[in-house]
Image 1 (cartoon, protein in one colour):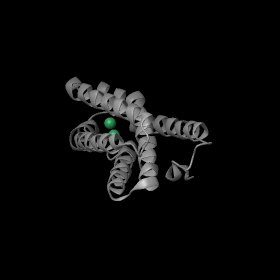
Image 2: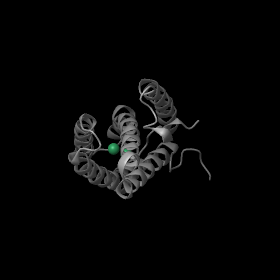
Image 3: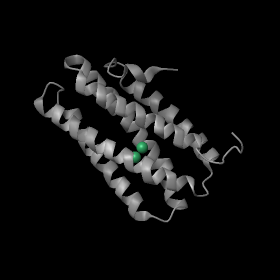
Image 4: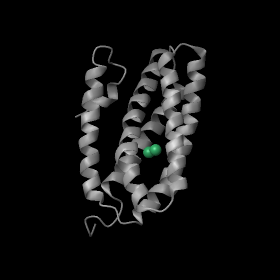
Length: 168
Ligand SMILES: [Fe+2]
Ligand SMILES: [Fe+2]
């Protein structure tokens, strides 16, 4: 490890960790059932909402400004839009509903595709550009903490659905 902001910034590492966590939850979902499946889905949704907000509000704008590829960024934003639509619909369904499983599987496919594009194209491209990764990391971590605190307070009473989010 030489220079402090050379590459593989903390932000990119964090995004990749989030991606791995969510992909793991999608896999667990497939082999679980009943209440366990409902809890896994709730945790995945919780993680996705925080991750998406960090990207939309802080990370994508920084990348968009640094790289010259608005097509790629616009496509990523459209994929986020679909993720939000599916999450909104999932929240209206009971996990027992037969549509829930189908919708969650579509969400999982969409997110996995999106992650592939981020890790395969967008993030490597971003790392080749001049972004103030240190400042971005500080802003992202601060926002993440605030979002997690807010969400755990909000879902405090009907909690247990997000057991893995409470580490600290
Ligand atoms: Fe991402
Ligand atoms: Fe994303």
